[in-house]
Length: 310
Ligand SMILES: [Zn+2]
Image (cartoon, rainbow, N blue to C red; front, side, top):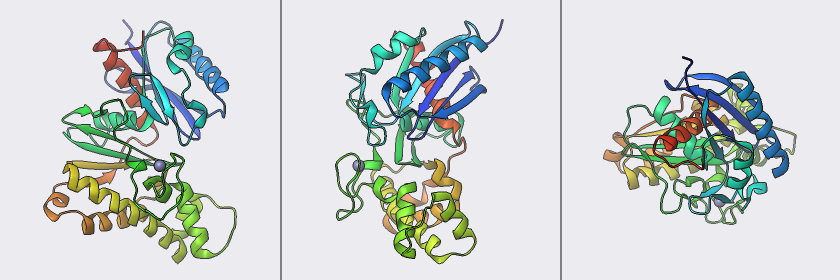
């Protein structure tokens, strides 16, 4: 008797990642494609991907989970607002998914589901309270409290990316000024470097990492500035929640200590000492797979609890 499989889809600002896990949480298959800019192409891509998965593993896929970038309303079953993927704003997701996905499905914010993935299968295993952050195109986060994904009253909990860390800062995609996401993300790192170097060259976050490694002071200062603001946010989180672990993932963490070092130092300066001493801040362990694994497990667990969209 072949294993049952559970599908997970993770839509970020740049890539749609998808895959199948089995009941032991092992990835059986995975793939990715660039995120289409408009909603019709996105739904077509999801449908095409589903057909491909179902053809590979006929009748074995029992549920599908979807992590979307944006503020997901549990009540309305829509993304109310997506600062990094505006095509999703208020789009009637459930009716559209129902048409193309023939198995029970569940939806949530992408970072919440990545937090769930790290909690079940990654750096957050065996932890009771976990704060997860992902630094990439934007800054997503999710919160596990006493072993449960903390959703808040309507699903919008865990949005650390949109707390104010710089009251005089830049306008954020959410409409607020000086959100953590405006200071800690790939575009923020690039902006820092341009400011410090005074040059307006074409540049990606990865180039700044390579330059930091090669001894470029402006690159190092660019990471320090991101770490400063991230450390302020983590100081708040530590004082408020006294979490057992804070796990940071996403493309930004490929830079490792360049971001993590100044972040830890600032969090230590800001947080109350006994709380900081009991909280471990470390790198996520699932990399790009956290989102799709968490999405797959979320839908599967919602199915078991009788809470899926079908
Ligand atoms: Zn914001």
